[in-house]
Structure formats: C-alpha cells, structure tokens
Amino acid sequence: MQESTSRSSSAPIDEPAFLAEQRGLRRLRFSKTIEDAFQHYLHAKMASRVVVVATSSIVFMLLFMWLDYVYLPPELATYTLSIRAVGLGVICFAIWYSNRPGRVPPRYAFAMATVGYICVGIMVAMVITMARAAEVSIRVTHDGLYLVLLSGMFLLALPMRHAVLGSWTIVLSYLFAEMMMSAPARMLISDGIFLSNFAVMGSLGTYLYEYMQRRAYLNEQLLEAARRRAERESQSKTHFLATASHDLRQPLHAMLLFIQHLQEQPLNGEAQRTVGRLSDSTQLLQAMLNSLLDISRLSVGMVRPQIRSFNLAPWLQRLIASLDSVALRRGIQLELHCAPYLAVRSDTLLLERLLRNYLNNALLHADASVVRVEVSRNEDHLRIAVIDNGCGLEEADQERIFEEFTQLRNPARTLDKGVGLGLSICRQILHLLQYPSGVNSRPGEGACFWVEVPVGEWQAQPEEPMQAVVPNLHGQVALIENDRVSREAMQSLLSSWGCVVWAFSSADEALAELGTAGVDVVLSDYRLEGELNGLELIRQLRERGIFGGPAALVTADTSDDLVESARLADLHLLNKPVLPARLRRLVHEMLEHAGRSAADARSGARNSPGRACEPE
Image (cartoon, rainbow, N blue to C red; front, side, top):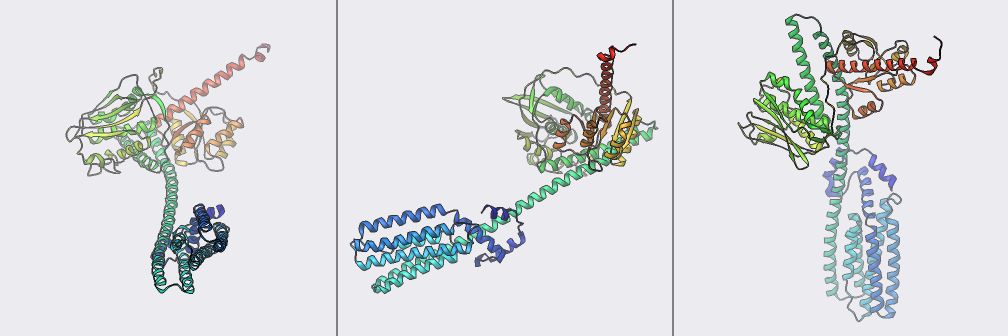
C-alpha cells in the first residue's frame, strides 16, 4: 500500500485531462486511466472505514443472535442462530478480504464486499420470513432490513453500481420470500412500497455520494497539480533570480570600477562633470537592480532573518549619516531623537533596509523640510518612527502606497524618484519579521511611518575611531576572475592604487602560477571556470602551502549558504557590485594584516632558540 501510494504521489498529473473529466461526472465514469486511479482511491476510502464497519457489523450481528436466543422458540432459534452464524462468518471474511488496498485489486474487493452485503441481507430476510411463518409470540417486521440497506448504501462506501445492485437484490429477495410464504396481498403490497421507496431513495443517495466522491477526487488531483506547478514555478523563479542576480551584477560591478578609475584621473571640468553624472546614473541603476532583486527574493521566501542584539543609537546615526548628502541636495533637515542606551533584537540588514526605505520615501516624495527619526519605549518594544512635515496622505492612499510600482506624485515616472518598490519591500520585510507597524497621516500634516522592534541587551562598546583616508596601497594582490571585463576593471583600479596585480582567469591557472608569485592577498570570484569554485580554490591554496594569507571572495552570489561557508573558512565576502571605496578599504586592511603576520613570523624566527645558539 505504501509503495502504491508513493508511486501515485510521484507520478505526473495530467491537469487538462482531469479538467476534461468534469464534463462526465454525471455518468459516474471517467476515462480508463483516470477511472482505474479513482477505483484505487475509492478502495482506500473504503479501507479507511474498516474498523467502524467491522465493529458495528459484528456487534449488531451478535446482538441479533442474542435476541433470537432469548425471544424465539428453541426449535426456531436453532435455525436462525445457524443462519446468523454463517452470515457472521461471511461478514468477517468479506471485511478481511476487501479491505487490503495494494494487495487486492479494487474490482475484486468491491465484488467481495457486495457479495457479503447481499448474503447478510438475504440472511436477515430469511430470519424475518421464518419468524413470521412460525408465528412467534413477538411481532417480527422487516425493519431490520432498513439497517442492512443503510449500511450497504452508505457505511460500506461501495461504488454506486455495487450498492444499488446489492440493495435491490436484497429487497427483491425479501419480497420473493414473502410471496413464496403466501403472505397476504395487502402485506406484500405494503412491504413492497416501503422497501422499494427506501431502495429508490438509497440509490439516489449513493449516486449523490459517489458523485461528490468523484468531484472531490478531481478537486484533490487538480489541487495537487496546482501545488506541484506552483513549486516548479517557485523553483524556476528562484533559479531565475539567482541567475539574474549574478549576471546583472557582473557588468554593473565592472562599470562602477571603471567609473572610479576615470574619476581618479586628471580630467578637465566638463569631463569630470560627465563622469560624475555617469557615476550617479550607475548608482541609480544599482539601486533599481537591488530593489527588483530584493522584492523578488522576499516574495519567494529566499530571505531568512538573522536576529541579534545591537545598540540602536550609533546604528541609527550611521544610517542617517549615509543619507545626509541626499537630504542636503534637497534642502531637508535630518534629525535623530534617540536615547543613548537603547538596544534592539532584530536582523540588522532587514531593519536597515526597512528604515532606509522609509527615510528615502520621506526625502523623495513627502515634499518635507524636516525629517526626523524618533525612538520611544512601548513596554518590551521600541517604537522607531520616521516622521516628516510634508504634504501628508489621504486615508485611501495609506494602503495603496505599499503596492508594487506605486508612486502618488510622480506621474512622469522620473527615475530620480525610484521605481516605486521601496514601500512594497517594507511590507514584505514587515511580513517576514512580524513586527507591529503602521502609518499615521493627514493631508497637509505630514506622515509618520512606525515599527515596533523587540528590546535587546545594550552592550558597552569602545568608541569607533575616525576613519582616515586610505593611503596608497603597497603589496601584491592575486586576482582570480573569469569575467574578462570585471577582471580588467579590478586590475586597472588596484594598479592605480599602487598594488602589483597578478590576474588569472581560472582556478587551474592560479594554482599553477601562484606558487612563484609570492602574493600578499588573494581576491577571487566565487564562480570560476573549471571544477573548482573560488572557495574551493582558496582551500586548495592553503592545503598545498601555496598561500596562507588573508583572502576574500568578490562575488555576485548573494546566497545565505555562501555567506556561512565564507565565515567558516575565515574569508572576507564582498558582493558585487562593490563600491570602490569599500574594496580599497578592505584591500588596505588585508595588506596591513599580511604585513603584521610577516613581521611576526620574522620576529619569531630571530628569537627562536635554534637561532640564538648559532655563532655570529
């Protein structure tokens, strides 16, 4: 039975064929392939009732045997008890044989159940007619047949044709027995009317029951087909997102690096302004790409929150500082009202994206002069509110603004105001984090977007030093990148910063030539030509003793699994497109770390005991 179920569950479902079968429901007959599957389905349904059917049948049969023994004359009870004992045996055998899906074909199971049903009905009819012929002291009627007919029509879960055949066979057998016993015509007509009407209503009931069973079966199969189709589409969409994310980030990464290289060249005023506009357009393209990929990743459940406690005030200060230039260009005052010793428990990246989108919405669309972030305590939550004194929102618009690609005050769809996905991403993030949130606004009175975040544990942290300008870099860098344009862009930029760059297009090439290069830092893409990816390449370099210094993966792959693998391998991870300033800062830190490690190694060698005993 389990093997049959597993085969049927894994078999493909012909959805159009099942849709076409809905037209033939009234005939209670499907096409051969689907009819065979439905018979197995009906057989399983019948077997699911075996305990109830067996218990009720045996209990009632034993009860009737006890009544026969108590109320019938001994000479008559001998015959009736014998008949009922035979019937009980037939019932037990029929129940045992019929209710074994996967071992007995459905047609044999239904046939045996019908034979058992008919035998029991005829047996009851014989007992009734014998009791009437013997003129026992108690009044014997045909009411017991009603119970038998009800059981066969509904309790046994037989197919309609089997139930109708069995029921009418029992009714006609009983009427024939009465006729053979020379029952009065008035009794024969009366019993015939009652039993025939009961059989007609039961036949109609079994027809409706099987009709509903067949419709339920079709609906279950169509629902399963829809579920499988949704799973395939979700997997296809996930695959598309992963591919699109990687393939679109690659050229954008190269563009940013080439633009940075241009900006660092001595250009005249007009050329510098042109490069600046090109940089702004590229960053806008990057923001649009990130928004589209974020909303898609959130909608298919590819994002999993990573919850931890962190101090709120410095985190908000850094967030607001990153938007100062946008506020300054638009003449908007950004303010923060947050007590110094507060902490929250949340996913830092998701919460930052949520509040950043709220702030961007206020800066770009609210026509405000002041935008402030206020933090207040609400029992075991902190309410973070983004408040502006802008134009406000109508009540009808307060829900519509969270729909995809919706912008209330941008009819021309100018790209400097985004693509209308910011608040839609906020709704997806709030659904994922399950935080209380809301919007309070009136036309002309500004708006307040708020969210309540669980309180975390505040941790004392040393003051962060002021970030100095990164000086020119000095060191040798191995760059492994299979995309030619990205490789040339990174090589040019790193060389302009003062690095000696050894560029390789594949893992095999890097393994073959890095042994003689003596590099300080390794930067590798994750997806490379050949059998090894970037993570495996760095592991091979370490295991073979070719390179043991700091390394980083620079990749367009943003999966959580890769983030965890990089962390376990003690690798830095940069997601493309990489901001040039971040790349330069990381390479600088890695070169400093490599220099300290080399100095420590030399110092250890000079101070080792073997070295001290050598003659000068």
